[in-house]
Length: 150
Image 1 (cartoon, rainbow, N blue to C red):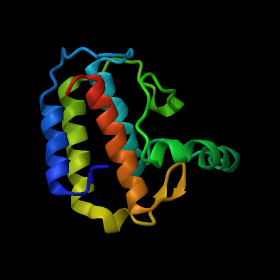
Image 2 (tube, helix red, strand yellow):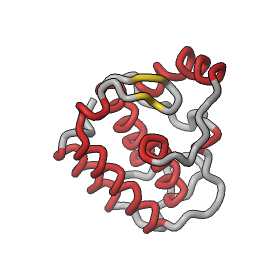
Image 3 (tube, helix red, strand yellow):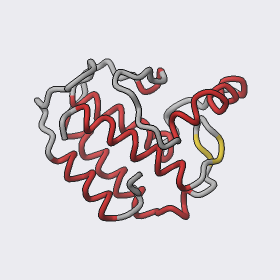
Image 4 (cartoon, rainbow, N blue to C red):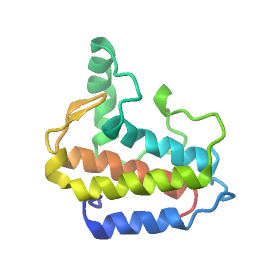
């Protein structure tokens, strides 16, 4: 899997994001392009912002036991996969604002680098390796950028 922490990969993902427009239609799914960008931002909000409630101990155990391997593993997400409630975006979003936020999150993540993330506590899955963080970040972005044809 590509390494989101490498500048060339971060730049490639940003180039894909920059190919989107506010009217880019999805190839599958229900989200608009602005909603998809907001949805992708949730992953980074859980790292950088304290705006999403943390799961209680029981839910965190369930997430670690049954969901973590699907999210941080190497296998791509299937089309129309289930998503966690905090990732469901139903209200209208501002395309340019969400696009800028996502690019800023990507830049910040790349600049912090793998060492910052190695052993860092995940909102839902406990401590993750740098490789698990990479897989979660890159796989999710790749899935949704592919969903919108870029």
